Length: 251
Image (cartoon, rainbow, N blue to C red; front, top):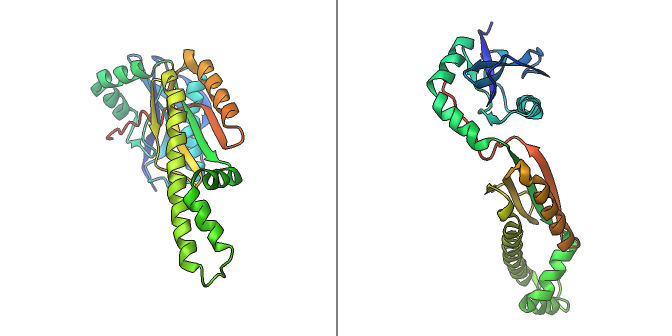
């Protein structure tokens, strides 16, 4: 039988013991609550001391506890997935030992949210644009029409390489334009390298002050109108600041 510990989801700005009304990680439904110390609190639940697999269910439970704290208006500092302290006393010890670091981070993240922006080229439009803008590709493609598959095999490979290179150039151009349009309305931004599919232009996170969130929304609407035939946007708001704070707590 595994020993019992305390799973840590995030740190928040709270001086009281609070119930967050969401079930904790795992299948036991342990309540999520806070362990406070001088205005900083760990959001936790009871848990066996085990290594949790990074499954969809476990990741969602971890994130939902953080989101529950944010819905109550707290500033949340996400803690690395799978962090389990041996007991509540250990958590108090950690909060006391790193109090200055935690309070500084909480102040830096106060009143800020992460907004996610993904941009993907519309398939038919971008490849037609490449033919229109790159005359050498257009010329090479036209030359293939009179040749059979075997005769044009290597030429088709070369055209494929040219299209791939042109697509990367277009992605870079659009990415720079989108970021230039948004960066004045955020505190910080991160571009992730996880691009899904060859047509994805960018997968970005923006850290935005809540007072600027409406303006940022309007800027996203402007982008959607500007590129409405060419680019599809996925815009997700009110996210925990996973891309800007990722506390690793040694327990």
